[in-house]
Image 1: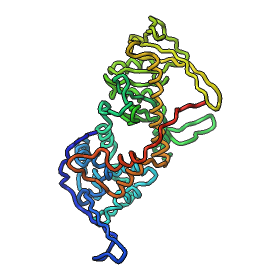
Image 2 (image 1 turned 90 degrees about the horizontal axis):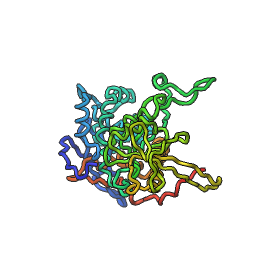
Image 3 (image 1 turned 90 degrees about the vertical axis):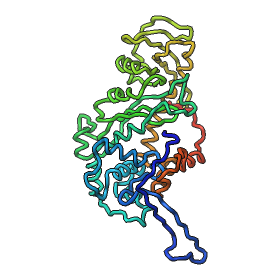
Image 4 (image 1 turned 135 degrees about the vertical axis):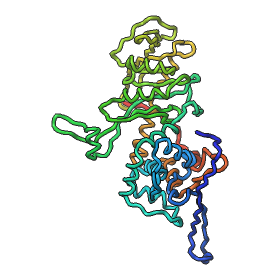
Length: 399
């Protein structure tokens, strides 16, 4: 995103030099390492994400704060901009409390007069900021989907995306429990409160293009309706059975996007016209769709399993969009599940990936905070990933 964006003069910058030697000259057999760190000035210095600050620059955060009316009325130890970066960094150090995240943001800034803050001060600063600035910042950074050029991200000229939902545990605090509720049975309540997270994901890159969440009781289709704002011509969205109601499919088609949705086994669409590739024309309400029926067999160590799938899609021309190619395409819907796996098992499950570890290192070192003339979109994090590429994934099969 923002390839080739010119750097604005940071204006408020300072340099911190660190050295392993406290004397004027190195001792025998030792060397002196001196490093210059360019960060924001004064009490703004802890507000950074290391190299990722180039993607979320100071001026962007300042503009968002101004638009949301969240700029501090008086200069505090924790200006609003610093609190934004603190919360973003907390997503990289999910296992840490706010004081520990603060220590990582300031670890390389020892020679600067960084103010001392308490955990209570960090909590109050977060409450003062509220949620609107983070929501607005997400809207700035989440797209546009059309910028994705990764090989395999498109099919028949269409950007391939998927919508699906998942559930996440949240802390069992009284206020959270009162808002979200808890799971229950006939004997008692159990487990943690949960939110329902529904996301729009690019299947080629597993990038989250849009998201909506809230109490689990509301359901993923309600949150999915909010994501339709990010669809449009030039995309094809893959949908599971839970999103295949007439109303949801009609609203999806109204965005101009194509869809490929799996139907429930009990649904029996009417046959209006049969095509040469075995698919047939049908109608859901006022919407014309093409129905593809396929039988898929999977052999695993648990035995041989065969299932019948019924798919509905809006591309009606079987010559340009053959049924077999659409069946193969639907397998890509699983990439949204892989994206959720990365969030749950890597970031929330404390299993470090190369990208996450490299990003954390940049934050702790306060490295590459200020960009050069043109932003290097690959950067240290990207090069770390490219140098340690994972092997090709095995075919996913499940009994």
